[in-house]
Image (cartoon, rainbow, N blue to C red):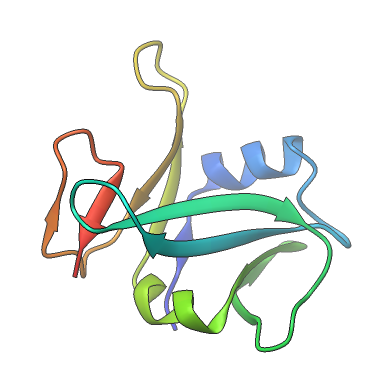
Length: 106
């Protein structure tokens, strides 16, 4: 499993309270115009089958078994530019993405 998180994204996640008992839960679900969409939330309750997909400097990312299939190679970055500020998810395994970049297909 290979997931990378940029320093800028790590700093922003820590600012949001990710660390210690809190982790970022990354999920992939059907949706969006290209077929699949990412969602992410801060959580502190592990569920049966959850898998650690990234751990570094006290920061953990967790995915459920159904999402793990789609996150290998995922790159997470953070942009603070005025027009499109926020977290950016880039999956090199995606075969296509919608125009706005919020969903993908494998």
